[in-house]
Each structure stands twice: as C-alpha cells, then as structure tokens.
Length: 218
Ligand code: SF4
Image (cartoon, rainbow, N blue to C red):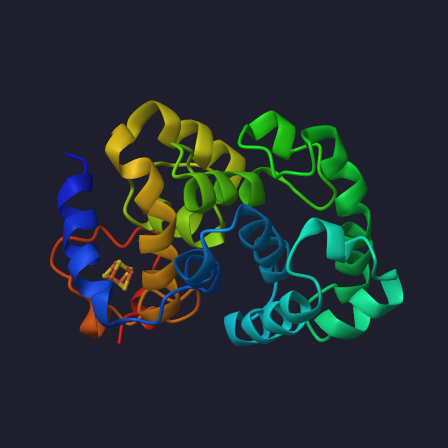
C-alpha cells in the first residue's frame, strides 16, 4: 500500500514552520514582484541560499526592474552577482532578459510556455515563478522533490521531468503549489541528500525509506 501523501505533507507543513525559508520564497514574501522572483530564481540555481540572498540584494539595489537591468553591462552584472554558481552564464542570461521581456510588454509572463522562452529559464524555474510569483498551479520538481518523492515510493522515476509528469497525474491539485517549498525546506533541514537525519524525522515511523541504506540511518 502506498503512503498517505496528504498526511505526510500535513506533518511536514507543521514541522518546517521553525525551519529557514528558502530564498526564493523569502524574496516573494518581501516583494511579491514577479521580476525579482524570476531573477532570484535564476540566481539560485546550484547556489547556496545565503549566497543567492546577498547577490540578489546587491543586484536589486542597482537594478530593481527590467528597465534598470537593461542599463547594466554584462560585466557589471557579473560583478554584482559573483559568487553565485555559474555567475558568468547567469550574467549573460540576465543581460539578455530585458530584451526578451519586451515581447511581453516588459512584464514577466504568467504562462509556462512564455516563461520557457526567457534566457536561463527551464521548467523548474518557470514552475517556481508560476507558484511563487503568480500563485498558479504548477509543480516545481527540483532535486529535493524528485529525491524525496522516490524515497517515499510515491513515485518511482529516474529523472525530475518524469517525476513532474508522474506527480501531475497523481498528486492532488491542492498540493501542487506547496509541495516544492515543503520538500525543499525539509530536504535542506532534515532529509538531506547525503545522510538524511531519519533519527529526528517526524516521518520516521511512516517513511518507506526507499533507497536510503541502513548506513545512512543514524
Ligand atoms: S525518515 Fe529519513 S528518509 Fe524518510 S523522510 Fe525522514 S529523513 Fe527522509
């Protein structure tokens, strides 16, 4: 028998109240500005939250919107966002962003396919922007969601894209918006990719722990 996903997410919703909020959520709580949410999401890929938060702050002081971002050179952007992961490539994406947004009246679009036309925006980023900036139903599957859903045996998939497709069929709609925030926060705080803290986990008695070797259970 499979797990009760609503029970799992309900327990974690309570559990993560005392955890640190992921940076993109934080930006959205602070601003509700789709431009800032999009830029922070692009910066956050393969980067620690603290680094993303500081880089976003430096950049937004100089370029809080698309118009001001367009006045910066790629070199200036690079200096402002350093040391986020892949800062050179990201400076290139951000430098091209204002031009790409012109197709959408200089506003961040609220449609998945439109978002996917923007530089540096893949499915994960687009889904997160839809969730966080526009409160739209999309499932943002990153490595934490993919990994933990497989550990729970709720899906049995080999890639984040396959996980997203499986969740679209199976996960009740009312969980779509919250699942990324819950599992990213929980994945960073307890169910780590290496050596998850099963010893202090609220799901210890319920979790099937698929693929988690006994060595990793402390
Ligand atoms: S029991 Fe362990 S593997 Fe299962 S969710 Fe908790 S930390 Fe992750």
